[in-house]
Image (tube, rainbow, N blue to C red; front, side):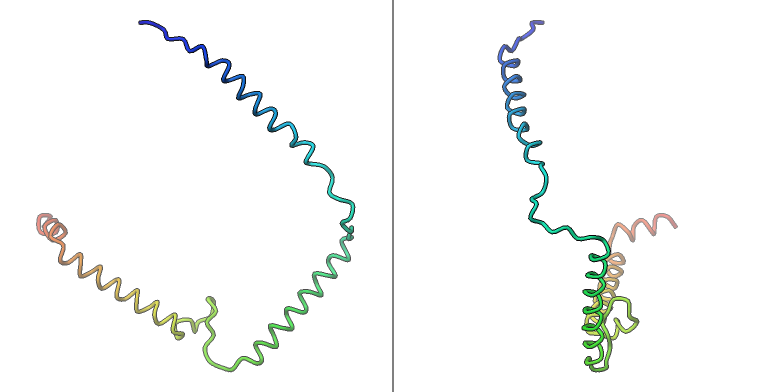
Length: 119
């Protein structure tokens, strides 16, 4: 058995390592400090800002709910989902799918043959 040497392997490997080193060298320099123009905000100011923002959204949702006329709600957690059009379509699709599956398995020769052979 003869051993084939590949003299090009070592120089190519060295070029690849050198190219990776040159490409990755500037990365630590790019990871410097953020610009000083960003304002620093302390924790209590940040919390009070978030609370004010949340209070505004809560007021908006309560106003929207009070203006909403009665009827069924379609939230995923509400029990009236199946009374909505989307719920009715979901139930109908499930029933049709189950019916087609049962019909298909009853007409399937392999399933019928296996049932009759096991008895």
